[in-house]
Amino acid sequence: MNILAIESSSKKCSIAIHSNSTLHESFDIINNDSATSLPIMTQKVLTTLSLEFSDLDAIAISMGPGSFTGLRVGLSYAKGLSLALDIPLIPISTFDLLLFPNIKDIQDELISVLIHSHGTTVYQSRYILKNKTYVLENDPSSITINDISHENNGTIMYSGPEHLIDSIKALSSKIHIVIPSVCDVIDIGMKNFDLLKTKSINNLVPNYIGSFNTGK
Image: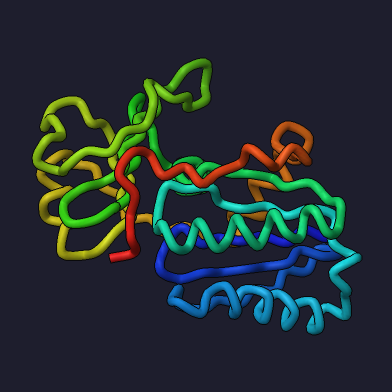
């Protein structure tokens, strides 16, 4: 199976293609030319693998939350390819993208995933351990770091700028710094292909969660 993956929730837009157990990746910094650079990166990797666009079987993509510009551009490009090639999309929450590849050595019953939005505002999603798997405790929210309770945050997984790390450390003694990886987009997409794949893309929109990030 040939799967194209797009990860554009952060300032670094990454794409990768998995083909015949081979994985090739390309990335660029998100800017006003992202809509142009994304197809260029994809074509470059296809050429490296001696593939055509018509050889793609699906597109896995991070759906946010994260960069407003990156998510908008990434999903627009993925939708266009999905329609043109008549292949499914595999939408993946960026919270899940940060959580599940990084839980191997965590024993905590509660994990809080925090993704930087802007200023001191973060997107928060809390997962609790049930029947040996982590499930959402409640709906994700947009909240300032100062408004997060200092009690019962469990292990915190944080994705964002370094200058806020000290403030994050005040919330829990167990902090993991994590970054979204396009390789994990492919891994999650392949493992959950039948569950997540969809051709009903008209209603697919980035998960901005309240106030959206302008990329600052």
